[in-house]
Length: 376
Image (tube, rainbow, N blue to C red; front, side, top):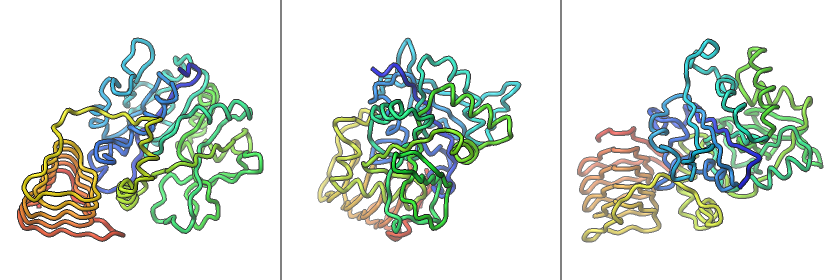
């Protein structure tokens, strides 16, 4: 049990490049990998680090997120002391309930921060997916005497699309790992070290940084707190070498979901050593009727397959009708594909109905998406 740190997760990221996926939900509640939500990963990472005090800052479209998290029982955070604290916007003399940015959001929950008995805070967003624990990162933070330690991973620069940048923080470091420069959403950067939106610092320093930024009218944590204080404080980087999925755009969402069909990627993100927990829903096993079959696909519980499914990810309760063909698609919970329909490179949100005999197609480089609950 790690009694020296607590977690603080900001779930209010608003990324328009995710399009219909965030029309009625926050990024943290976006479904991923057949049965999970993006929040499950960072929350499980914190819990697997032995941390039992976690605050979750909600901002907008957070009703589905609250329904998913409930009391935190699935993450063993349903406790008498500490546990999971969901912190939605509220109106006071100093807080109007509408945040201009992450600085406002964190400032609104400083009461929770001050009440937390732990010395260190693990501050994180929710749109970056990885599977680790924070033990080694915290140990390095203490050993180096850092003021702030920033998790980062190395990415191949030729695979990065500047048009899909979202909270892209680049770290320049010296030979000791100390950060000498930070850049936010740079164009044509030659720096491969990209932040994973996770930070460790003492809670007293977080209080100071947020209050100081707020007093100067600043609103963004990365640009107005981190970048402006790079030379004033000791920032260090901590490298994470595993698989990292950044949900920066619909294309990236599609890519990282489909990468789960690669055994090595799935084994990394869902390592038995660090289980990923989620809300449990009791469903019957998937059922294959007649000539129904699935090849190289992830099929969740409750699905009924009467047609053909290939290279696809199906969430709970999906029905693929007789003679239908689904290839290279992501079908979310309770979608219905009618008899004889053909789909390729499509992302269907929850409850979408595709009538009989329809043909819907996107492209690998530009998958098409249908908004939650529509009928085609």
